[in-house]
Image (spheres, rainbow, N blue to C red):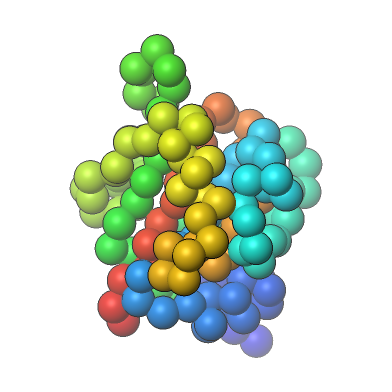
Length: 139
């Protein structure tokens, strides 16, 4: 039995294949995962509306991986979603790179080696703009 925060076997296996610079998308329940993640390994975790949250998954992944960068999707009106503060707190104050909606989709659909998303996780998160694209750091 695993004794880490992260116990999902699909996610653990996918992360084991990742290396420095690999990209992982943790998406809210509204994100079009099938259409906007290219050839990434896709894991659907949503149990019911609101569970698990993106921040639950981020915390679990961060417990087993170093994270060197994070990108988020920002609203067109320039507002800052409340969840961004939770992302920054979990990531030790790391600055979030802000991308527009279509720029974020493009980043998640890249197919070039070293730029493609390796793992895409759909959650039950209901908060809007609760998507984060993380880059795995050096162990």
